[in-house]
Image (cartoon, rainbow, N blue to C red):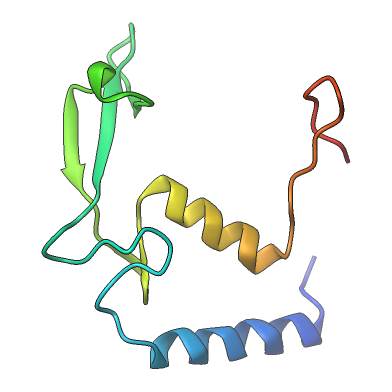
Length: 100
């Protein structure tokens, strides 16, 4: 399924705006190349590495890098960028289930 032409134009305009913005810090978490975020990983029981939620669970910490102009590759920042790009907000019902 291809995207509608007006959506492609909107993406192109956003890319132009992002490229023109300075790359000195992430616009979500405000990290810089000198003060990079640390992305934490834990090892599961099968030896696969997963994102760690708490620093106590982490076995590896790696500094972030640039995912896109003005956005680092920390999972929270990439998620915020995707939500912003899609114009979506996740809503939950009273029982905590995601509403469609």
